[in-house]
Amino acid sequence: MEGEEQPPQEADMETIMTSGASESVPRVLSGEAQNLSDVDAFSLLLEMKLKRRREQPNLPRTVTQLVAEDGSRVYVVGTAHFSDDSKRDVVKTIREVQPDVVVVELCQYRVSMLKMDERTLLREAKEVSLEKLQQAVRQNGLMSGLMQMLLLKVSAHITEQLGMAPGGEFREAFKEASKVPFCKFHLGDRPIPVTFKRAIAALSFWQKVKLAWGLCFLSDPISKDDVERCKQKDLLEQMMAEMIGEFPDLHRTIVSERDIYLTYMLRQAAQRLELPRASEAEPRKCVPSVVVGVVGMGHVPGIEKNWSTDLNIQEIMTVPPPSITGRVSRLAVKASFFGLLGYSLYWMGRRIVSLLLSLPVAQSCLQKASAARPGP
Image 1 (tube, rainbow, N blue to C red):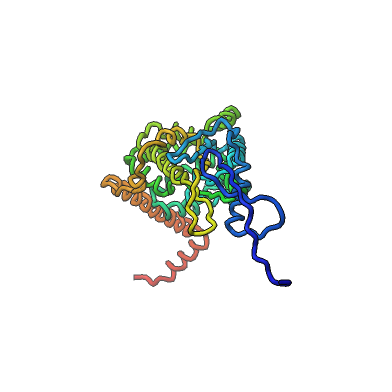
Image 2 (image 1 turned 30 degrees about the vertical axis):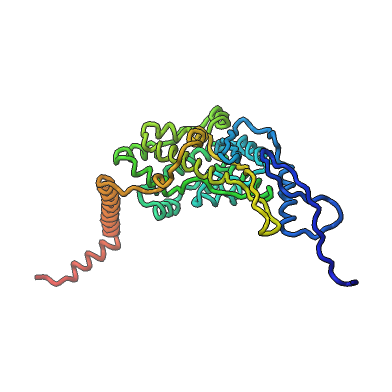
């Protein structure tokens, strides 16, 4: 009947094979304009994505391929946090494999760097202010906050020397993931307060003093050769490894435990992908997923080592209670701080009063007061 809306025609369907999987996904054939259902639209976009995905991707040499038990593939891009080459490696990998999930070595406390421009990040990285120190102490406690600021100082030192803000590869991963249909973006690193609190708890009082001393006086210039080496190895992680090498417990909490956490998050992301269904009666179909992980190259060997092992992250997510020595050292640090502050205020007060009394006006007032005082 004229003017009556015609029911949408069913789209002609055929199947295509997904890369590395035996399951099929529906394919919408080209032809006359059609009213697509949500399922058909999803299928069409998924088909476009799979066409872009290379069966034999041409990947950079910094990429390590891992395979999950269900056939899902994980491409781990080992990066240097201060390297343009790493940015290009991340972009190339994501474009080649068209992943379903991108996982980066960030936590919710550092996610703000993804949306900042390079100039703002460069300025922020160079500025280690009292306000940042107070925020770090509020979030992580006194000792962990101080440790975080000392590590930020190391990062700021490299930033100033290289003129490049850290985390460029994560920002590139975020931008490229947004261009891939149905690609999810996951934060894969352990929350930084947990890492710092466990790191502090692992050190004795004198180890904390020794480490803080080394971080405070880190000011060696970075040469052009170091910049070139940065393209081959993560300069920040290398400098940190040299400083914490004599503290095995610190290396365990900052590096080894985070290797375990990153491995766990990559394995969680590598879950089979469920295909859309036209109706609830249609059986569920799943295909292996493709994941790209973007991590510092210092973590890649640990991820490979832990990939096929049983992982328990509950143990590395707990913060041990402070020991008696730790409580005493914290009280000693606080007492020393407030003692020095009180003494400084007392000394400054005496100095100010002495200076005021030495002024001619003050001397004249004192003399008049003495003269006006009645005798005995």
